[in-house]
Image (cartoon, rainbow, N blue to C red; front, side, top):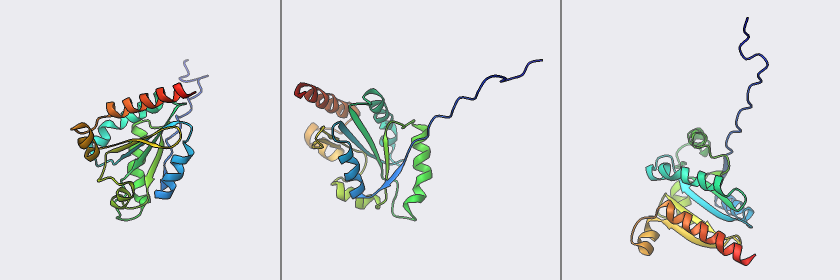
Length: 173
């Protein structure tokens, strides 16, 4: 007689991703809490194909540099219809499918266009890289990238800025 699973404890489930709802002031507090590490803020939406395509690069960055880079994702999925909580299931499902456990996941509670104005971006995708002191090193969005690079930005550009910031930080220590 064979007992299937006898003596085998089920593996504990992987912890789910966390998702906090924030307004602009809450975002600023999250970024202040990251001082001491290079920080990457990725602004995205589940309705943005380039955002969804590149999101795994943010997750990989968080996995590659868990002690020196703070990766934050800010979802712009709340469009001002209903409540921000209405957007949580869709955003959480995407984050779970992306295994974004090492990323600080945030959902904006201000209507997406209003939040974009406060961040001085036209829309998503947009990525901000901050140094260890919380100073903005580089802003990546299509408008600023076209002016600076003559093309849209890629996550290779973001990662190069992060590597340079980590290298600069290492030389100061």
